[in-house]
Image 1 (tube, one colour):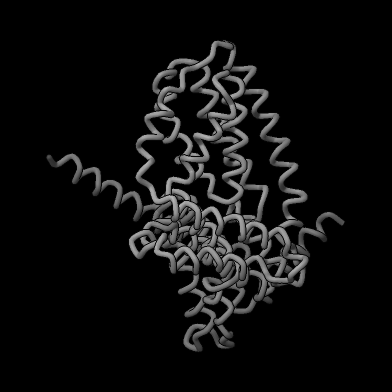
Image 2 (cartoon, helix red, strand yellow):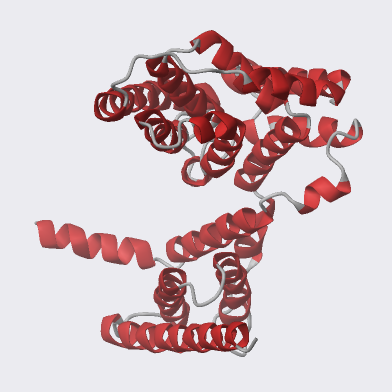
Length: 359
């Protein structure tokens, strides 16, 4: 009875140790690396960088909580005359949560949530199995490339969870075979790789595009795909060949009877809602791909699924609660930290030192 309580206490104590350990380490590193010419703003930001890294590495507090702390710290430390003799405008550090990167990611989250709610994702997975047939090699190839494509619009985590859940009836019948190993590994690997293909495929892509855009370097959706998609396809193909060579040695066909059961279970889903989601996906992606023609930014286009899916009632208030808001907070906090490192000159200072060392 008391074991869960003791476990909870140990976790809280460990978190406290990690928190204060990160704090002390950040103070020591800041003291060792500071220079006489540093301004108070630079010292504050340098300390924040080390402290945030420590908290993220030790997971003393949730990652999104660290991001919120970053924004609050920058507001008080850099913007208040009580802490900083030369207070700065703090708008840039809090506006990251309403920036283009956040809207872009939010649009992708809405599309993914709508696909899952209307079971459009399961329909596409069944179509994939029908196309691949019953040969194990074809099934692995089809699902790896399907995972790669899905993860260009959805997060790798959501793609993997969705596809593995849909394949559980098949995996349960082949639990000890090489096919199950190849599918589980292949879907996870392909989902991770596929995120490189588009701007919204993974958060780092959107962050990179946002930072470049703020510095006058504009990259449109299609421009990113020209480089990202071939790389994703090549890496997925290589991974697929390796997994097939390692695990799929039995060419005997597998049984796909569970497809009919899934079909009967999904007949109650709204055909109209599925059609709306499909149209929204097609229109949004087409507009993203044709950004150079019409000049509408990818972040502005991301508002289409947000507005249409809520107005049509496909995404409700309860669905909004289940979106990955923690990811958005994490991205916004990271952008705030990056903005602080750049605006205070910390990045330029150490970049110059590294350049001098190479000389």
